[in-house]
Structures are given as structure tokens and as C-alpha cells.
Image 1 (cartoon, one colour):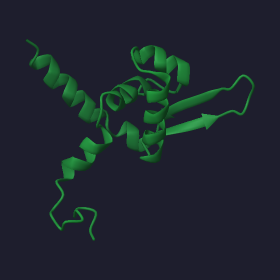
Image 2 (cartoon, one colour):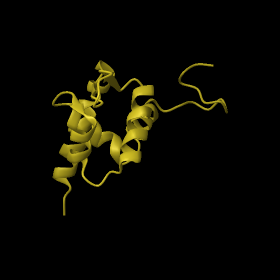
Image 3 (cartoon, one colour):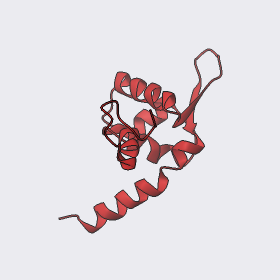
Image 4 (cartoon, helix red, strand yellow):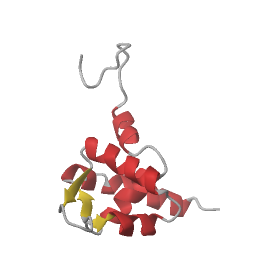
Length: 108
């Protein structure tokens, strides 16, 4: 089966994969903050604001599994872990820029 085919043998819209990678409230915001460079977990959580520890942890694990971010565990006490964007994650910047442009032009 082609990557552009669903199990039901219906064609997959190419934009659907991008939407899957950006789905949810937090993923675009995580990418936005990591575009400036790697951050530690707590710094990222502070920038995101209302996100819970559990939700951020789950979101980061999912994004790492999708190849959007990398995780560097320094295996120190106290724990030190950095997160940053992979090339694949950085490649979503034009999409986020387009979303920002659209939002600014359509604010009421």
C-alpha cells in the first residue's frame, strides 16, 4: 500500500499528514517556541503557560516519535534534558508562518 493510500483504499490528501503532525493545541506552540533553539522541559512549560506537566510530557514523546523533535538526556542529577527541533520539525516553519499570516489578517 502506498503512503498516499488509506487502508480503505481511498486516496490520502497530502495535507492530511501535515495536519496530523500539527494536530492538537500544543504541537504548533511547541514548534513555535523551539524554533528559537533548544529548551529544557521546565523552560518550555513556562513559555507554553497553561499546559500540564503530564500533557507536555505526552506531547513531547509523541512529537519525538514522529521525528519532529529530538531529546537530549544528559543523565545528570538533578536531571537535565533538552528538547529541540529536527530538520523535519523545522520544515514546518513555513506552515506556521502561513497560519500566523492568516490569523493576523482574519482577526475580528
